[in-house]
Length: 134
Ligand SMILES: [Zn+2]
Ligand SMILES: [Zn+2]
Image (cartoon, rainbow, N blue to C red; front, side, top):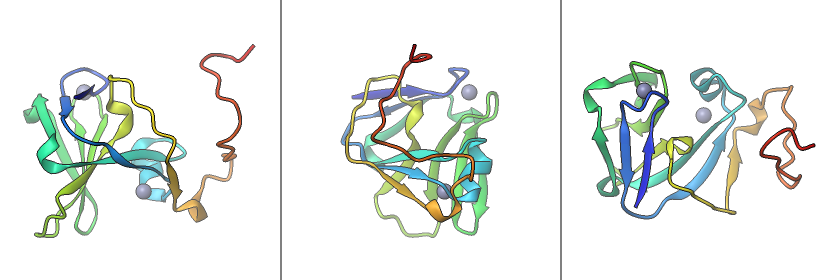
C-alpha cells in the first residue's frame, strides 16, 4: 500500500497495487502546470487508486482536449492526469511526488525531450545529492 498527499495535506491518496510507467514528461504543458522543468508521473490501475481524503477540494482543468489534470484548490498540488474520452484503459497517471511512502524504481523514462527546458541538463547517471553535496 502506497500513501500520498498534496502539499497542504487536504488531499490524501492510496494506491493498493502496482505503480508502473514512471515517466518524466518534458512537454510545455507539464512545464507550465508544474512550474518545473518536467513533470514526473506514474500509472496505477484505476481500481487501485483512491482519493481517501479531500475529494471535494479537487478541481480539474482540461489542459488539452480530452486530457484533464486535477489539482488541490488549496495548495495547487497536481494530483492526476487523466484521459476523458469516454473510454477507459483502466490505468491513469498521478503525480509521483505525492507519495509519502518510499518508492524506488530504476526503470524510468523521459518523454517529450524535444521540448526540454534549455536550461536543464539531463544527466541521470550522475550522483544524486540529498543536500548541498558538500
Ligand atoms: Zn493541498
Ligand atoms: Zn507533459
